[in-house]
Length: 562
Image (cartoon, rainbow, N blue to C red; front, side, top):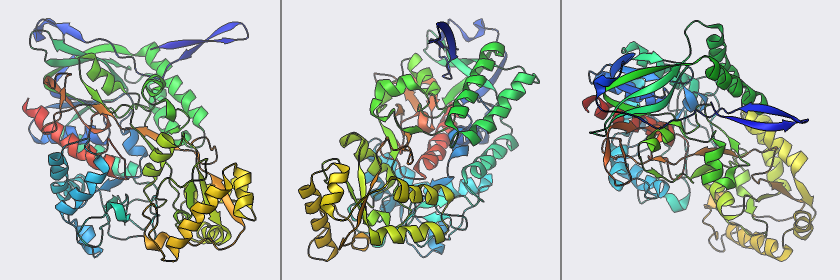
């Protein structure tokens, strides 16, 4: 386990790295040259939603499967909202009175994937969407057709179908009439990710997959002549040891600390890494057919973040503790090609309160730069990539009091209402006039005035909104006072959640990992956020989990036949 040294009062203080050490592949002449500790047809590395989907699918194809996880399984899937992006005519869309087709879904997704995967893959994903939702139900997940009455980043308990992306934004709509909601939240009390993963984990075990937890994969084993990946070297904590139990207990503790006690969560991850360094012992596991990499993204790897996306280093990393790019680096160790590692999703949600997007978001010059009603990851991308991570949300007193009422009486989640109230009353800067507000936030007064007047003209129906805001989201700023809320990446009371989207290049037909020449690496597959997929360009809620199921099942099927 890597270590760094810091000076502390003249003494050297050793700091344990939480990043999985990945070694060069172990090259062998023949698979029988090693004394393998165990073997299976398919080895799945990483037991989140993608890994579980791959393992279940490989097992359904008749393969003997071992799934390996550094922790207890779940990863970012457990910590997610448990939203699955599904459409094309699901039962829940129909029950809610919406008509959707695979073609309409594919046409919308073209706006989100931006060519990161082929149109054929988008089409196949859309055509399989209904079946994949039914497959999740067969594993034990439950969905529902009840919808909230307003646009939200995440619906409260009792509501499970919603517009989870940019479907209602005019620029994203196709010629198919009323847009359909495609965010299918798993029925659960509270955040739904744990409930969704519990169903997948139980199904994994029920179908006979063998789990190895508290076990880290540090290198691949490759047969030299063929270049085939024939196994992995793992470092496993001893079963029954008190420190192994502590390592496992920390999984749940870190998940509970990560939101409000990030320093404590980081200390917990370092303690786990220290236990691994002290106790883990190597084992060799043979893959008779293939290895599937599904360990998540790399947002908890500071070296990779600084190398590929330094503009996001001040963001609030979210994901599982295992999202340190281990699957990515394992693939790279055998010559795998990567793509879009600089692509980070930054979630600047300004709804709820549902009236905030009726305000105006401006940059440090006082100019609007993005339609305020877009999905939060789109707004975050535009802010970080093109505005140096800085922006202001402009409200008037009417919008502010409407927002306050929704926060107090609109049955929002506490994580939605409390920050919004704090921002409006503790952070917001106030000006009796637009010119006074401009002075308070140090933007050009004439520019801010011009932007507001253009938005007002659109709200009165005199012209179209310059950035394409729909009629129902336009608002006329008639009189002061006016308020400006700092929504920049550096705003500590409004942390900007970030996660990585790029990954290993794969054969989109079957999930084979590809090398720099575009050739399949024999015996190696990838799925989920370790691989390039539907969610690798622009993130919308539910698309990552849906892609985990789609790509996981794809890789599991192909790996079982390798």
